[in-house]
Image (cartoon, rainbow, N blue to C red; front, top):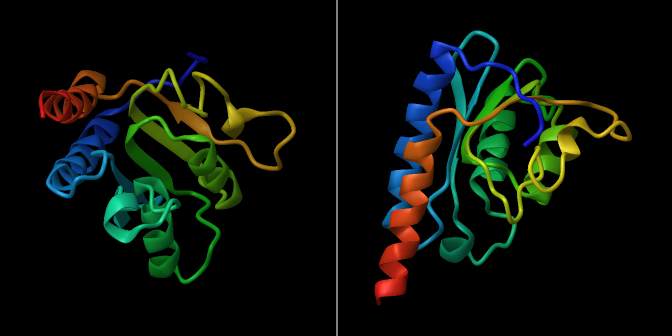
Length: 159
């Protein structure tokens, strides 16, 4: 994984909120990923869970839905000064959305060695070619975040 900044106690607390969202998603049949957007004052202004299956929408990832909710709450698409906290490393689409939304920080739980685009497989958010770079804090409450996913997929393999 690419170098990451250190997490602080607020990151741990916010990841707890993202984990709550992920656990809500478990019952939906969608891959249980949870996300929250926190503004510079530390207020949660957007939340999201994966809803691809529920909505039949390939773009309904937790990160995208949380970004949409935050933009609505702010009344604008620029989310500068905001932090996205998500239980699984964002994919290529979601990493692009972070850059385009001008999110300042990303706090992620579990790394995604297959499709991660913020430091593992790709590093879109810190690529020198993009017009905005995102600070990445990785591995926050990583075991808990990974366990939610492991339990979800283990249950499906048993069926």
